Image (cartoon, rainbow, N blue to C red):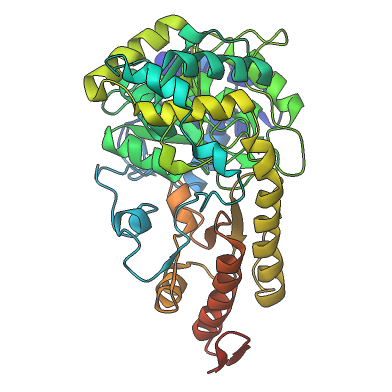
Length: 484
């Protein structure tokens, strides 16, 4: 890009707070990370860029100095200033997830003799009433009288999901709902429809690991934006979207995975205002929205009157609030989007399993599963948290108000070696890097607490023994005796 194209791409960068040279450096950095300024591309001379941006040459000189310090650009005698190699975000080009990914426990079928702590799912349904998983006779007989094909979803279920979403804070009609095979298919359909090869999707700097793999499978690219204890930083997100102009933004604007953060209401309201001015499609993953413990269920992305934004696709699921084996999720979007997504889904499977849909219809009609699950969710979270605090005080984490995981920092630079040791002690773990599109957070573990209490207690002891092994020190364990 020449200086005029860069000036146009930067947009209204100068309206932000802070030293103007740093603001300019951040703005240029966004273009580099997004790949809009390519590796090896020559940047305009300071004087030309300053004229195009209507700032002093000293501002551009200082911004370039800042970017050199970040290893984003390099200056060589006779070659000018160019974008550094490897300046763009990590690109996962292999469409097949490697060994050591979150799917390993499911793919191995539980035959690897490990307690699987790699994927965040709920184990068992004994905390729910038995009748929750019975097929209602009358409804099932009516279904059997027909052909059984419902590509958009079992009509009564679409109506009940619409009511559930309306009650949750976003006005929804049945034709704005598509039933899918879990939330994973919902995400895949939306990404396939709106992202092409090498297209950019803006995501949080920590995100759902399977979405990273999904974008890799589509040969897309990811651009990250910061998160903190209150969820995504919506102001920095807006700045990134306006600069890199992605076709899609993927967020967990309710309950965040892996941190369990809940987006505060003030940020949610600002996010709605920002999204109304974006050209991008926003994919809002609300799979964990029901899994709240210490606060009310977060509201969806919607206007104050509950009306939806046309460029937002919301995704939900029963996998966490009831049982993953039902494989029932949904898309909520404006009717035209739903029609296009439905046609894409019909090409793939002609509809989700009808028995599961009938069963979920009954559950939603009673609206009891999420409320019943909350007490057990809190119990399991606290068992794992207390166990780690007592047995592994060197590990650091905040007890999350929602979600299914503890996001745990270990006092090492990389947890890979510890993961190997933990496997020898019977626990399957995944590095925090699996949640980072940029490959960071290698000193973190994502520890799910969806398993039964007795299993979580065993996990804590195994991890304590594995950590002592890693640190090469003896330990006394109530379950395994004296080791080392």
